[in-house]
Amino acid sequence: QVQLAESGGGLVQAGGSLRLSCAASGRTFSTMGWFRQAPGKEREFVAAITWSGSRTSYADSVKGRFTISRDNAKNTVYLQMNSLKPEDTAVYYCNAVDLINNPRPTGSWGQGTQVTVSS
Image (cartoon, rainbow, N blue to C red):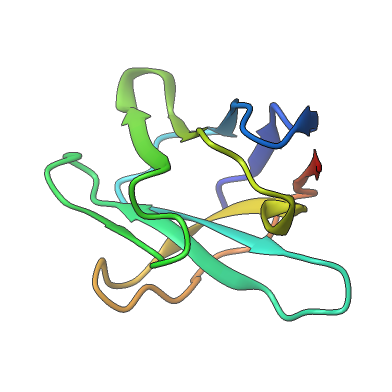
């Protein structure tokens, strides 16, 4: 089974930017997604991208601020996060998903990467 490793999180001020990476241990032909979990809350969908990169989907809360992309040659999926808000604070995870329009995780979770946005 492909292992996923998220990185790129950190502490940033509101309005700042971060770029998260999700490196897979092998090739993945799946639609991939980013999810996040804030303290005391359930994990929620953030963004997804098909294998070809031709289709993407986003949660309403991040549309226009976040951009998902992938480099299949590097087995890596990215999440560019701009105009960050304190409510974006969470642990961010990547996972394979089943459908681009109603993405549900299908694989195992990695360790995640912490994003903290200060006001």
